[in-house]
Image 1: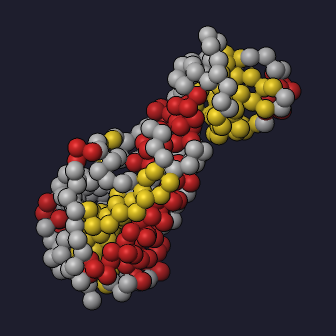
Image 2 (image 1 turned 60 degrees about the vertical axis):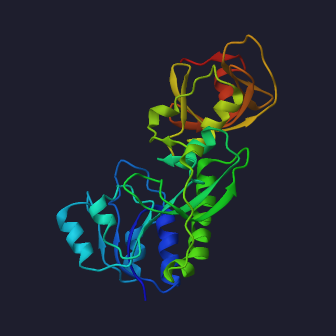
Image 3 (image 1 turned 120 degrees about the vertical axis):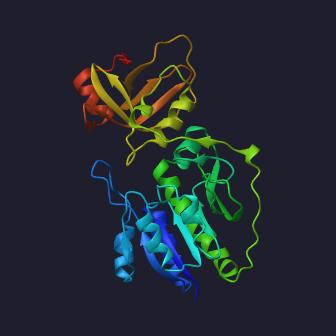
Length: 306
Protein backbone atom coordinates (compact mmCIF):
# COMPACT_ATOMS: atom_id res chain seq x y z
CA UNK A 1 0.00 0.00 0.00
CA UNK A 2 1.37 3.40 -1.00
CA UNK A 3 1.77 5.95 1.77
CA UNK A 4 1.08 9.63 1.13
CA UNK A 5 1.21 12.97 2.85
CA UNK A 6 -1.53 15.28 1.56
CA UNK A 7 -1.26 19.06 1.56
CA UNK A 8 -4.71 20.44 0.85
CA UNK A 9 -7.54 22.87 1.36
CA UNK A 10 -10.91 23.79 -0.11
CA UNK A 11 -13.35 21.57 -2.05
CA UNK A 12 -10.70 20.31 -4.46
CA UNK A 13 -8.68 19.15 -1.47
CA UNK A 14 -11.64 17.31 0.02
CA UNK A 15 -12.70 15.59 -3.20
CA UNK A 16 -9.17 14.55 -4.13
CA UNK A 17 -8.46 13.25 -0.63
CA UNK A 18 -11.63 11.18 -0.99
CA UNK A 19 -10.27 9.74 -4.25
CA UNK A 20 -7.00 8.70 -2.56
CA UNK A 21 -8.90 6.98 0.24
CA UNK A 22 -11.20 5.22 -2.25
CA UNK A 23 -8.12 3.75 -3.94
CA UNK A 24 -6.70 2.48 -0.67
CA UNK A 25 -3.86 4.98 -0.33
CA UNK A 26 -2.51 5.15 3.22
CA UNK A 27 -2.75 8.87 3.99
CA UNK A 28 -0.39 9.26 6.93
CA UNK A 29 -0.88 12.99 7.44
CA UNK A 30 -2.96 15.91 6.17
CA UNK A 31 -1.34 19.34 6.14
CA UNK A 32 -3.94 22.09 5.78
CA UNK A 33 -4.71 25.69 6.74
CA UNK A 34 -6.57 27.27 9.59
CA UNK A 35 -9.56 29.16 8.20
CA UNK A 36 -8.99 32.90 7.93
CA UNK A 37 -11.74 34.77 9.87
CA UNK A 38 -11.48 37.60 7.31
CA UNK A 39 -12.33 35.23 4.45
CA UNK A 40 -15.80 34.00 3.48
CA UNK A 41 -15.63 30.26 4.21
CA UNK A 42 -18.09 28.71 1.77
CA UNK A 43 -16.13 25.55 1.04
CA UNK A 44 -15.64 22.16 2.72
CA UNK A 45 -13.08 21.47 5.44
CA UNK A 46 -10.07 19.21 4.86
CA UNK A 47 -9.49 19.03 8.61
CA UNK A 48 -13.02 17.74 9.22
CA UNK A 49 -12.77 15.15 6.45
CA UNK A 50 -9.39 13.94 7.75
CA UNK A 51 -10.77 13.70 11.30
CA UNK A 52 -13.69 11.64 10.01
CA UNK A 53 -11.21 9.08 8.70
CA UNK A 54 -8.87 9.23 11.68
CA UNK A 55 -6.05 10.92 9.76
CA UNK A 56 -3.70 13.19 11.76
CA UNK A 57 -3.85 16.87 10.80
CA UNK A 58 -1.38 19.72 11.22
CA UNK A 59 -1.88 23.39 10.27
CA UNK A 60 1.56 25.04 10.18
CA UNK A 61 1.87 28.64 9.03
CA UNK A 62 4.95 27.52 7.11
CA UNK A 63 5.36 23.86 6.11
CA UNK A 64 9.05 24.36 5.28
CA UNK A 65 10.30 24.73 8.86
CA UNK A 66 12.84 22.14 10.15
CA UNK A 67 10.31 20.79 12.65
CA UNK A 68 7.63 20.13 10.05
CA UNK A 69 10.13 18.72 7.57
CA UNK A 70 11.43 16.22 10.14
CA UNK A 71 7.89 15.23 11.16
CA UNK A 72 7.03 14.49 7.55
CA UNK A 73 10.34 12.79 6.73
CA UNK A 74 9.80 10.38 9.63
CA UNK A 75 6.60 9.14 7.93
CA UNK A 76 8.64 7.91 4.92
CA UNK A 77 5.93 8.75 2.38
CA UNK A 78 5.93 7.40 -1.16
CA UNK A 79 4.00 10.40 -2.47
CA UNK A 80 3.14 13.98 -1.68
CA UNK A 81 -0.14 15.29 -3.08
CA UNK A 82 -0.96 18.98 -3.04
CA UNK A 83 -4.60 19.86 -3.64
CA UNK A 84 -5.22 23.63 -3.47
CA UNK A 85 -2.69 24.06 -0.68
CA UNK A 86 -1.72 27.73 -0.55
CA UNK A 87 1.93 27.61 0.54
CA UNK A 88 4.88 26.74 -1.69
CA UNK A 89 6.77 23.56 -0.83
CA UNK A 90 10.54 24.09 -1.02
CA UNK A 91 13.19 21.70 -2.29
CA UNK A 92 13.97 20.06 1.05
CA UNK A 93 10.35 19.00 1.38
CA UNK A 94 9.91 18.03 -2.26
CA UNK A 95 12.86 15.64 -2.08
CA UNK A 96 11.26 13.54 0.68
CA UNK A 97 8.66 11.37 -1.14
CA UNK A 98 10.21 8.31 -2.86
CA UNK A 99 7.84 8.37 -5.85
CA UNK A 100 7.39 12.11 -6.29
CA UNK A 101 5.29 15.11 -5.31
CA UNK A 102 2.24 16.01 -7.37
CA UNK A 103 -0.02 19.05 -7.44
CA UNK A 104 -3.56 19.55 -8.76
CA UNK A 105 -3.91 22.92 -10.50
CA UNK A 106 -7.21 24.49 -11.55
CA UNK A 107 -6.46 25.21 -15.19
CA UNK A 108 -5.39 23.48 -18.37
CA UNK A 109 -1.65 23.92 -17.90
CA UNK A 110 0.46 25.53 -19.17
CA UNK A 111 -2.31 28.14 -19.36
CA UNK A 112 -3.09 30.18 -16.24
CA UNK A 113 -0.19 29.12 -14.06
CA UNK A 114 -0.21 30.85 -10.68
CA UNK A 115 -3.04 32.20 -8.57
CA UNK A 116 -6.87 32.13 -8.93
CA UNK A 117 -6.84 30.52 -12.39
CA UNK A 118 -10.63 30.10 -12.61
CA UNK A 119 -11.27 33.79 -12.03
CA UNK A 120 -8.62 34.86 -14.54
CA UNK A 121 -9.95 32.47 -17.19
CA UNK A 122 -13.43 34.01 -16.93
CA UNK A 123 -12.11 37.58 -16.92
CA UNK A 124 -10.23 36.81 -20.11
CA UNK A 125 -13.30 35.37 -21.80
CA UNK A 126 -12.09 31.77 -22.04
CA UNK A 127 -14.63 29.15 -23.10
CA UNK A 128 -12.78 26.23 -21.51
CA UNK A 129 -10.68 25.46 -18.47
CA UNK A 130 -10.08 22.39 -16.34
CA UNK A 131 -7.77 20.66 -13.87
CA UNK A 132 -4.22 19.40 -14.29
CA UNK A 133 -2.25 16.95 -12.14
CA UNK A 134 1.49 17.56 -12.49
CA UNK A 135 4.76 16.87 -10.74
CA UNK A 136 5.88 19.64 -8.43
CA UNK A 137 9.10 21.59 -8.77
CA UNK A 138 10.33 24.59 -6.84
CA UNK A 139 8.79 26.84 -9.48
CA UNK A 140 4.98 26.67 -9.30
CA UNK A 141 2.87 24.91 -11.90
CA UNK A 142 5.65 24.07 -14.37
CA UNK A 143 6.29 20.36 -13.74
CA UNK A 144 5.49 17.46 -16.06
CA UNK A 145 1.79 16.69 -16.54
CA UNK A 146 0.34 13.26 -15.70
CA UNK A 147 -3.41 13.94 -16.11
CA UNK A 148 -5.71 16.68 -17.37
CA UNK A 149 -9.48 17.10 -17.62
CA UNK A 150 -11.24 19.94 -19.47
CA UNK A 151 -14.60 21.54 -18.67
CA UNK A 152 -16.57 24.21 -20.57
CA UNK A 153 -17.05 27.78 -19.43
CA UNK A 154 -20.50 28.85 -20.63
CA UNK A 155 -21.17 32.52 -21.50
CA UNK A 156 -23.03 33.29 -18.25
CA UNK A 157 -21.22 30.95 -15.85
CA UNK A 158 -20.10 32.53 -12.59
CA UNK A 159 -16.75 31.74 -10.99
CA UNK A 160 -18.51 29.56 -8.41
CA UNK A 161 -20.20 27.52 -11.13
CA UNK A 162 -16.92 27.07 -12.99
CA UNK A 163 -15.07 26.23 -9.79
CA UNK A 164 -17.61 23.51 -9.09
CA UNK A 165 -16.91 22.05 -12.54
CA UNK A 166 -13.16 22.27 -11.96
CA UNK A 167 -13.59 20.41 -8.67
CA UNK A 168 -15.25 17.54 -10.54
CA UNK A 169 -12.58 17.73 -13.24
CA UNK A 170 -9.88 17.37 -10.58
CA UNK A 171 -11.64 14.33 -9.13
CA UNK A 172 -11.96 12.73 -12.58
CA UNK A 173 -8.34 13.44 -13.52
CA UNK A 174 -6.94 12.02 -10.29
CA UNK A 175 -9.26 9.01 -10.24
CA UNK A 176 -8.32 8.10 -13.80
CA UNK A 177 -4.55 8.21 -13.44
CA UNK A 178 -4.11 7.11 -9.83
CA UNK A 179 -3.88 3.32 -10.44
CA UNK A 180 -1.08 3.83 -12.98
CA UNK A 181 0.59 6.39 -10.73
CA UNK A 182 0.62 4.01 -7.76
CA UNK A 183 2.08 1.27 -9.96
CA UNK A 184 4.81 3.57 -11.27
CA UNK A 185 3.43 3.38 -14.83
CA UNK A 186 1.91 6.86 -15.30
CA UNK A 187 3.17 8.71 -18.38
CA UNK A 188 4.38 12.26 -17.78
CA UNK A 189 4.38 14.95 -20.48
CA UNK A 190 6.65 17.98 -20.34
CA UNK A 191 4.89 21.34 -20.45
CA UNK A 192 5.50 23.80 -23.25
CA UNK A 193 5.67 26.87 -21.03
CA UNK A 194 5.60 29.20 -24.03
CA UNK A 195 1.91 28.38 -24.46
CA UNK A 196 0.84 29.90 -21.15
CA UNK A 197 1.72 32.54 -18.58
CA UNK A 198 1.70 33.21 -14.84
CA UNK A 199 -1.10 35.19 -13.22
CA UNK A 200 -1.02 36.78 -9.78
CA UNK A 201 -3.57 36.88 -6.99
CA UNK A 202 -6.51 39.26 -6.96
CA UNK A 203 -7.75 41.70 -4.31
CA UNK A 204 -11.24 43.07 -3.67
CA UNK A 205 -10.29 46.40 -5.24
CA UNK A 206 -9.51 44.61 -8.50
CA UNK A 207 -13.28 44.23 -8.84
CA UNK A 208 -13.91 47.96 -9.34
CA UNK A 209 -15.71 48.36 -12.67
CA UNK A 210 -14.32 50.56 -15.42
CA UNK A 211 -17.54 51.50 -17.20
CA UNK A 212 -15.65 52.69 -20.27
CA UNK A 213 -14.86 49.07 -21.06
CA UNK A 214 -17.08 47.01 -23.34
CA UNK A 215 -20.24 45.32 -22.08
CA UNK A 216 -18.58 41.95 -22.69
CA UNK A 217 -15.50 42.80 -20.62
CA UNK A 218 -17.62 44.08 -17.74
CA UNK A 219 -19.90 41.03 -17.93
CA UNK A 220 -16.82 38.81 -17.67
CA UNK A 221 -15.58 40.71 -14.62
CA UNK A 222 -18.99 40.56 -12.90
CA UNK A 223 -19.28 36.79 -13.25
CA UNK A 224 -15.59 36.23 -12.41
CA UNK A 225 -15.88 37.93 -9.01
CA UNK A 226 -19.56 37.31 -8.16
CA UNK A 227 -20.28 36.02 -4.61
CA UNK A 228 -18.90 34.16 -2.75
CA UNK A 229 -16.05 36.26 -4.14
CA UNK A 230 -16.01 40.00 -3.25
CA UNK A 231 -18.07 41.12 -6.25
CA UNK A 232 -17.81 43.79 -8.95
CA UNK A 233 -18.20 47.24 -7.46
CA UNK A 234 -19.00 50.80 -8.48
CA UNK A 235 -20.80 53.83 -7.05
CA UNK A 236 -24.24 55.18 -7.90
CA UNK A 237 -26.11 58.10 -6.35
CA UNK A 238 -23.10 58.60 -4.11
CA UNK A 239 -23.50 55.12 -2.60
CA UNK A 240 -21.49 51.91 -2.97
CA UNK A 241 -23.00 49.49 -5.46
CA UNK A 242 -22.27 45.83 -6.15
CA UNK A 243 -23.22 44.32 -9.49
CA UNK A 244 -23.99 40.66 -8.77
CA UNK A 245 -25.29 39.32 -12.10
CA UNK A 246 -25.52 40.65 -15.64
CA UNK A 247 -26.56 39.54 -19.12
CA UNK A 248 -25.36 40.74 -22.50
CA UNK A 249 -28.21 42.51 -24.32
CA UNK A 250 -26.65 42.81 -27.75
CA UNK A 251 -27.68 46.48 -27.87
CA UNK A 252 -25.09 48.98 -29.09
CA UNK A 253 -24.67 52.58 -27.99
CA UNK A 254 -22.51 55.39 -29.28
CA UNK A 255 -21.28 58.46 -27.47
CA UNK A 256 -23.36 57.99 -24.30
CA UNK A 257 -21.97 58.46 -20.81
CA UNK A 258 -21.97 55.20 -18.77
CA UNK A 259 -25.17 55.19 -16.73
CA UNK A 260 -27.69 53.02 -14.89
CA UNK A 261 -31.42 53.06 -15.58
CA UNK A 262 -34.63 51.04 -15.27
CA UNK A 263 -36.94 50.42 -18.20
CA UNK A 264 -40.09 48.27 -18.18
CA UNK A 265 -39.15 46.73 -14.85
CA UNK A 266 -35.61 45.75 -15.84
CA UNK A 267 -32.32 47.41 -14.90
CA UNK A 268 -29.64 48.25 -17.47
CA UNK A 269 -26.14 49.69 -17.54
CA UNK A 270 -24.72 51.67 -20.48
CA UNK A 271 -21.08 50.73 -20.93
CA UNK A 272 -18.28 52.18 -23.05
CA UNK A 273 -19.42 49.84 -25.80
CA UNK A 274 -22.77 48.09 -25.43
CA UNK A 275 -25.50 47.74 -22.83
CA UNK A 276 -25.76 45.22 -20.01
CA UNK A 277 -28.91 44.02 -18.33
CA UNK A 278 -28.25 44.18 -14.60
CA UNK A 279 -30.10 41.16 -13.23
CA UNK A 280 -29.05 41.47 -9.59
CA UNK A 281 -27.43 44.34 -7.72
CA UNK A 282 -26.92 45.83 -4.28
CA UNK A 283 -27.07 49.52 -3.40
CA UNK A 284 -25.50 50.66 -0.14
CA UNK A 285 -25.16 47.02 0.96
CA UNK A 286 -28.79 46.04 0.33
CA UNK A 287 -29.95 43.95 -2.61
CA UNK A 288 -33.00 45.51 -4.28
CA UNK A 289 -34.97 44.79 -7.41
CA UNK A 290 -35.18 46.97 -10.49
CA UNK A 291 -38.80 47.76 -9.62
CA UNK A 292 -37.84 48.83 -6.09
CA UNK A 293 -35.08 51.05 -7.45
CA UNK A 294 -37.51 52.71 -9.91
CA UNK A 295 -40.07 53.26 -7.16
CA UNK A 296 -37.47 55.05 -5.05
CA UNK A 297 -35.51 56.93 -7.71
CA UNK A 298 -37.53 56.95 -10.92
CA UNK A 299 -36.50 55.78 -14.39
CA UNK A 300 -34.07 58.53 -15.33
CA UNK A 301 -30.51 57.64 -16.34
CA UNK A 302 -28.06 57.97 -13.42
CA UNK A 303 -24.37 58.32 -14.19
CA UNK A 304 -21.99 56.10 -12.24
CA UNK A 305 -19.89 57.99 -9.66
CA UNK A 306 -16.51 56.66 -10.72
